[in-house]
Image (cartoon, rainbow, N blue to C red; front, side, top):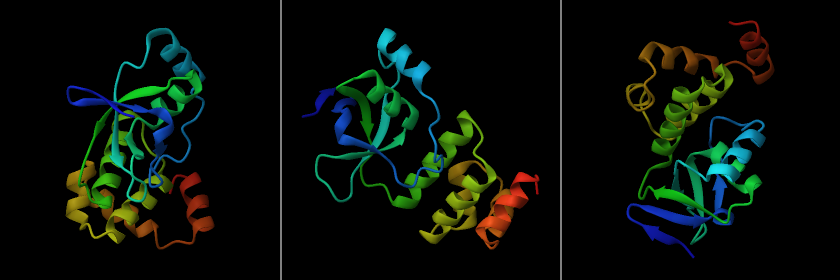
Length: 160
């Protein structure tokens, strides 16, 4: 059961899952963040969307690390803003933009996310506008998606 507090709703941690299209595939070690949450509570809300298949469940758009840390810290509820009626392409764009602001995504993560947004019907211009990446960067990253996965991984490790 959710508890509403103004525009923020407290949602059970168990009702929220990581978004399957989050460009950041690994949240890393969240032990220090979990310790901080135990000490001070969760100081910033998550942003979630309703799960498309399951009523009463949500997917995290912003706050994947905080969600993992809150679970590790043993929280039962977390504060969330629920975004309604958002296309999947827009969800991916928000996650890319948020991750770019916090810590750069790897080139393979950018390539995969940009290609997904385009596959979901966004134009290069729209991807650029929604993510804050320049059009030339979007075109370059999109070109990488033509490479075979292993070849691309080797090239990006070399910095190419």
